[in-house]
Image (cartoon, rainbow over the protein chains, first blue to last red):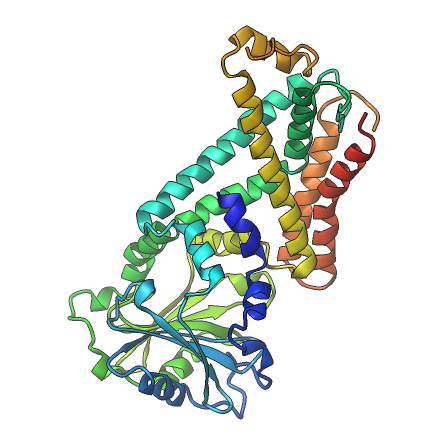
Length: 365
Length: 54
């Protein structure tokens, strides 16, 4: 199921573009994450977005490194769940709202099926456990590969013998060549499934430490939020040479109850994924603390591209899809081989492996 | 392909594909191309095996 829903998700950018999604790609001008002249103020952008969602509060503001497009996420409450959020796409050179993402597209549906099967945290952890079983199956398959291949050349596919031998050979071949890729996608999938506990851990550990002075204060109401531009200037001054990826507003899972949390990206392709957090008092606009994300959050950040395969252009996505198809065949043939012999005596099944499929247990076990 | 020893070829394929996965992560341009080459190796290995099946 994960392989099947994952396959179209590899191409979610392309599918969304064809389905007539938002037109961020069409905007030209300075990057919205920069402080280049010609860009409107963050306060003005936020006011525009909030005017379209009366009664709501801001949750996130995210930037683009290549275009003037940016997004503002709003919701009914500071701690609103993802399903209640509305994302608006804006152009920071004109101040216009360009589009609205409601999260109802086919790729959003597939992504949620792939992430939590619409069951929230329980679904995430269940699928994470399935990922762990997948990795365990990779280990056991690799252990069986050695005795099976003892008398066979690498890449042997015997199609002139029985159907079972043919599938045994395909199972071994596809499994062993894609082993490294399947391990990486499996392990990073498990790490991605732990996004909720990892975020909670960061909140309880690092974030709590950074905002200790605020621990006993009542949450800051949205009416007292101060200027975003003042806050951004303070954050930029503390982390020179980097550009912000997004701002998390107070009360959500990425900030405290009193801060604008500004997440900065490194300048190189690798450090771009490793965020540094600057916490700015949302009322006064003064910097409270700035720190790089801890190791467990870095692991999560690097697991995303390594799981989705969206970091090396279309050729990488095509290879990702092929290797995903290999995995589907390995899982399917594994099931076929197991169903065909599960009632055979153990000794006969061991002999099949150690003889490289030359001796198969009697038909129908 | 030649040789009965089980592990050298699979280990080489695994290392090459891992190198490709990481190369594409550390940059764009030629590093991406290195990633494509690395991950193409397992696909080519399967193509060869199917071509030589008997």
